[in-house]
Image 1: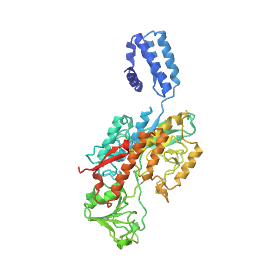
Image 2 (image 1 turned 120 degrees about the vertical axis):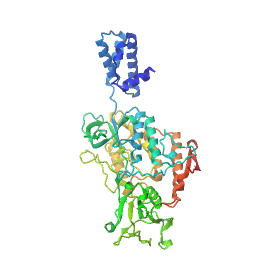
Image 3 (image 1 turned 180 degrees about the horizontal axis):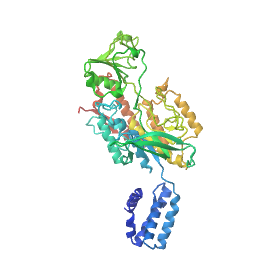
Image 4 (image 1 turned 90 degrees about the vertical axis):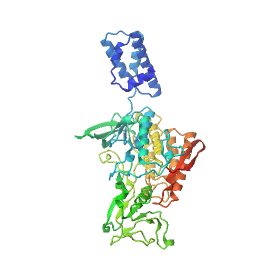
Length: 545
């Protein structure tokens, strides 16, 4: 009980300590002996508490009361003061309080490091925070996940699994899950809301850098006043920075020949929210992945006709160029051109060239780091349209300066547990790297740069490869999970079972989805999953609720 009480005192040094003067000498002696013991623990267990500052304050206040201490107490104070050389607590910043930022903060806390989280919004959740009729956020009112919650959950915070309710949940359900996670693990109190990071600088030549390969990083940020008035500007330096700002902020639009001929309206899926605004229209959705298929399905309930243009559309030659159709949704090949009369061409295999009222580009997003620029003293490439960040070691650490890490760059993954393993890998290196204290398992600089160059030029894991697929994983994500687990030193039989169960649920739910007509009835979302990690399997039942 004393240990817990003192830990709370240490964590809040501003607590009024005048009560010490009311203690009798024997109690005070015992108290300072306990301080000494805790500082010994601190030294041997890498457990950092501001005990030396507390001892100094006790000495000052007790001297003012002319309290004589026993020789034992004096010895205890000397022993406690001798520990003042203990290293200062590490300072780590996290940019973003979405799913990646929250789990990174949790893993840091679990390892004795209290981070600062900068969040530009006034709430947690990142992409999962829905704002009605927003034109700048990708979340829309009717969204339901295309992965089951039993698969999406963080490893140490299970979700669902009752076998009775739907596993594919709404954005509100996900936001609630993240909120509960942050509260349970004490992450919510670490967030600085309405704080927009404006500038990041790597402090390469700072004398305070214990390890030249692990320089400190300076951040400048503005904290906006929700009530109005000028924003407050601040700056500080950190031993490490984890960038968790997601990749759904910069809409990507494909280049289509003849777009200047189009006489209707265009928008990106980021601007979509309410399907009823397309009442009676003919709509073209360009892009057939999750968002394109879901938007086509929703809009088809209101529109006169919907075309879903997708590169995976089967060859139409055997159908004499006639598109596949279900209800009022037609599945057509890639959009190749807008003709002079504003009709749409889907290539030589499709006979239809319709007039459409609206084109919605469901074509994904580019990476964006507005706080990294030519003044950042950092080589980082994030070219619009490439969807490739370089140079990165293991797509996680900046290859030259691993004190800067990126969580959640890869796409086509099961995000939350993937972020969790990435965070564990990053945190495993932070203390060893920033203090140059040994235990660092990342390879030397030359090897990191070589590996980063090879990965940036690989075109992703799937042959023949292309630049835009550099961060694609899909079915290749499981080996990445195992690799990050081994970097972090958390790999064991239980984790192997967990990852294999994730893989099997992912494969099953994906197969169920791919069997369906894109833009048609989403019957796979009525499945309810129950995990059985020990046996690397699961059960699934239909659930109409």
